[in-house]
Image (tube, rainbow, N blue to C red; front, side, top):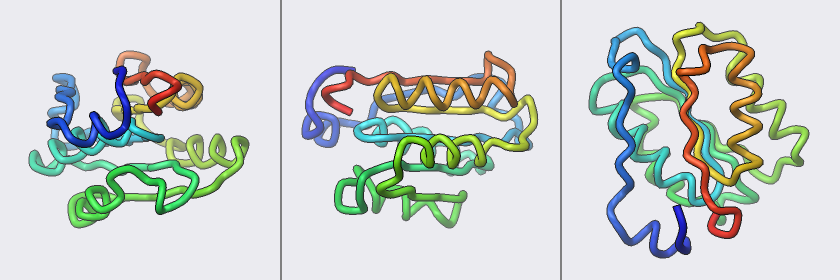
Length: 145
């Protein structure tokens, strides 16, 4: 996805469909985002909420003021778990990401969106817990995320 933050926020949310396996009632979904990756993850979280599916969201940002769609995520708290992680050094962000997945079932769906370094980190942690086909990455350009 290329473009600036303003164009991501102004246009309709990107459509990211849920894989067929995620449609089972008992499947857990864990969603991660950093930067403008929040737009895609917010859209997925809304779809999961409207379908009555279990989910938790982890947003990573430098501060609450710099968190994209903070209010949109907070509005989903009645449907799923929402965690905001602010101003964490890289090693602590990695620990928070890994902790959220451990332990989980191999059928858990992992969604992550943000810059390549972030999505690669989440993917590395997810491979220890879930099937590779259950890891869904939305990689953004480093300059927009």
